[in-house]
Image (cartoon, rainbow, N blue to C red; front, side):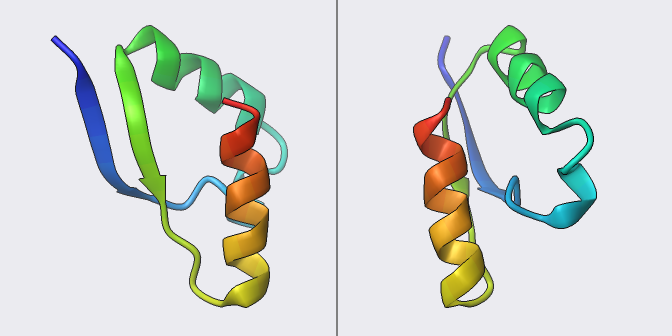
Length: 54
């Protein structure tokens, strides 16, 4: 079964210290797609950059 996270904010600065670990946990959980929603233009660009790494 594929899982889809319909709303997250991986670009948020509170994840700066452990973003890679969180991404690995996302993969381990079987989440194959996600929407990392930005809240302004800058965070939307950072969100795109983050998601390109997944």
